[in-house]
Image (tube, rainbow, N blue to C red; front, top):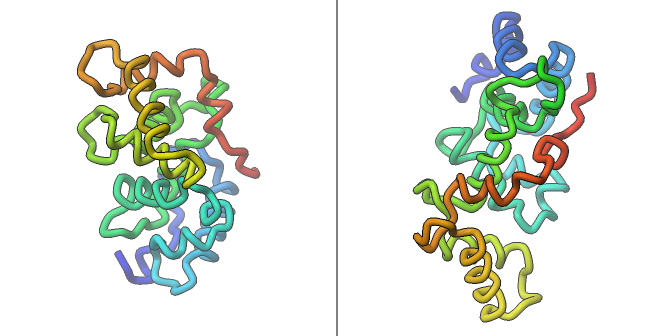
Length: 191
């Protein structure tokens, strides 16, 4: 996985990536160039440190959590190779046009990614501790911990329909049903 040979973009790989993700060949080539720029060691994969170089990630209060999700859920051994990177980015392709929807960029897939930002123990529910962790990252030291705890308790109380003191994926999705996830969770990829 770590050799240069593993990152060489072969025509067959390009076709497979395009077919599975819905990206055009030109988009894949452009993203491959960006990947190579981030891969400063030219080892064929990105690490946490490589991703933290991206200014938008570095200054984001949830940047570290985002990288956790990327590395743990989409990569392996704290590394992400180009194909894994493309499958991750495919989640953020717009899916408004029926023909542009793949298994990666459905509404459910986008909401699952968002849900997984909270559910780091992968038990298929967001518990109080997980919600508190994200709230603390988002507000930093600007709000007292007691207030954050009250917000977490109130949020779980409002969203928890089955009384298990946590938020299931179904409850999470129900809360966001009026939100246009495709619009809010899509990036524009140049053609």
